[in-house]
Length: 287
Image 1 (cartoon, rainbow, N blue to C red):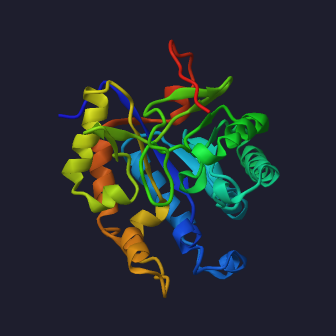
Image 2: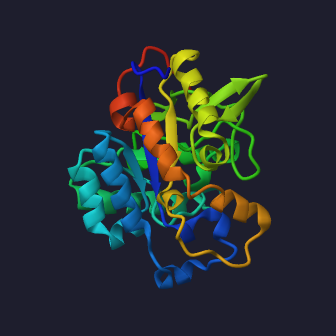
Image 3: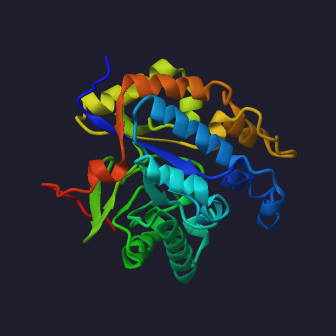
């Protein structure tokens, strides 16, 4: 049975289907405002699910989305969830200069704080795009006033990842924690066990078992993430995309909501800030 004595972190990356990094070659950023936006209805559905299960979560929200749906943002905060930053325009950190990155994360933070009237302390990079080649971004996050990041995925992946990074929460700079998405250590390799496309691809029983191992074997809180478009099987299909991209984006999206309900029932969940922003006895710095 799942370990209900450990509180895990439930996180939602608040972005719309057309803002996914893999779609960037097919959808011009200048056309975003002409696309059918579905993020608001999907977030309201997620908030309803969380209310039904008396669960709090962290919403890593794009500034671009927050500007257009302020009432949605206010509901997130009003119902007791953490509002955190996903940057402004969903640009990979690896594609930005340091000044451009600072502008992006500062702009998003200012928008979210104005709407919520609360400090925004957490950040997650689009596509987990902080890694070995751009650890300068951690100094920039600290300068912009963030207290934690969830941006370095300790896995091997064709688009992101830093396999040698620590698997669990650690200090990366004085005053800045990194809280990586959860992985399971198997045969000297870190396997993704924290949601996203893997949650849709693998049978639910496997995802549940992997999270159990993080709780029971490692004795750690797991960090799980998903996107609002993953519960929306009726979203418009993007034409012309490659087979790999089509598979990764659309596989099993009709099953995600049912699996999320089981996840909410099987584990205890909470907000990132309430779980991790507290003094820790031992911390390891990287970079």
